[in-house]
Length: 167
Image (cartoon, rainbow, N blue to C red; front, side, top):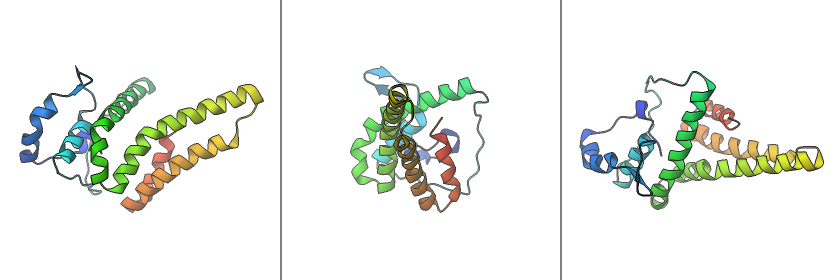
């Protein structure tokens, strides 16, 4: 659902068809300038184009080198995920079931993680211990999503994304 900016390539003819929509990003009536790669991917999918993962592709990009910029990046990405999910909802029935799972996981996952964390914190304050089911729930949600990705890509390295959940 998101072809990463520095890693994505588009046909010029496809991009030309969507350029006006892409340049005029609005959310709730206000101009939006974040998550442009996710927005463009969804516009492409809505227009009937498809995305393809190319495991042999190599790309370079600049990444945050300290915690503050990294957390700001993650917040921007989360905002674009939630915003563009509304654009993508009508697409889900037409897309691959994995993409539907991914969209649901990207949106419900943080909510369930937050609820589980709050429940664990409340249990810790009230009862003095963290319930085992909280840790199990978080680990299970993460491993299911990463396992499906690893299976589909036939690459065990996708399991490493489970380490991203606590962040």
